[in-house]
Image 1: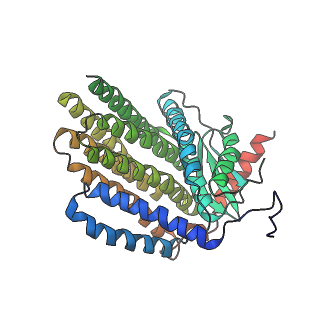
Image 2: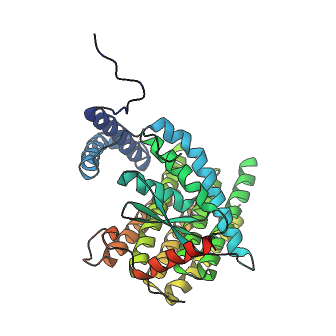
Image 3: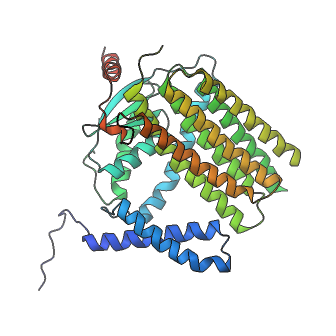
Length: 175
Length: 96
Length: 110
C-alpha cells in the first residue's frame, strides 16, 4: 500500500517533471515563432527543427525551469490582464489630456514573497495596470511608484500578486 | 465593409493613445510619472493600431506576425518600464 | 482607406516628434531613454501601418524594430549600473528615494 500524502500538505511537482514540461512549452513556443517568421514555408521546416531545439536548450541553460507554470491559468488570466491594461491606458490618457492634470505621485513598498522570475512578472504586469509602476525590489520588497496616491490604485497589488502566485502553482500568503 | 469600419475606428483609437502618451511625456512633472504615461498609453496605442490593421490582413501568416509583434511589444514594455524605473531610482537627483 | 492610413501614419510621426523634444531636453538620462523608447514603439506602429499600405513584408521590419527597441533599453540600463555590466538591483536605491517614500507615508496618515 502506498501512503497518500496528507491532504492540504504543500504539494510540489517532482523536479524532472517541471523540467520536461518547461522544455516542451518552450520548444512549442520557439517552433511557433519560427513558423510565423518563415511563413511556414516548406524548405524552412528542417532548419526550424534544429533552431527550435538549440533555442530550447539555450533558454533552459539561461533560465532554468524552477516552478511549474500553469498554462491554462495563464490563459484564464489573459482577459483580466488585457482589461487591466486597457483601464491603465485610459486612466493615464485622461490624466494627460485633462487641463488640471490630477497627479499626486508617491512611492510605496510592498512586501512580496514571490520568487525572482514571478516578481519580475508581477512588476511588469503592475507597470501596465492603472496608476502603478514597479521599480524592481530591494530587500525582498517590491518598490512601487503610484501616479496618484489618493486614487487607491495600490489596492490592486495584493490581488495581482495572488494571481501570479497561482500561475506558478502557489497559494499566496496574502489573503 | 465592416472590416474597413473596424480598421477606421481601431486605428483612430490607437492614434489617440499614442498622442496621449506623448502629451503625458511632455506634460507630467517628474521622471516616474512620465514613465507611467509612456508605458501604459503607448502600449495600448500599438495594440489598437495592430488590431485595426489586423482587419486588413490577407493571410493568416500576416495576422500571426501582427500578434507576434504585439506580444513582443507588450512583454518588452512591462520589462523595460521596470528596468528604466530602477535605473532612474539609482541615478536621479531631485531635479524639479 | 489609403488616405486614412496615411493620416494615421503622419499622426504617429507627429507624436514621435513630440517625444524627440523630451530626448533633447531631458533632464535626466532616464527621460531621454524612455522618450527614445517611445520613438521605438511609435516606429513599430508606423511600420505596421505602412505594411498595410505598401508591402506586408514590412511587418518583419516592425518585428525587428520591436526587438531592437527592447534590447536598446536593456543596454541602457546595464550601462547605468556602476560596473557597467550588471543588474540594476545590485545598487541600493538612492537617498532621494528613501525621502520620497517617507514623504508618501507621512502624507497617508496625517
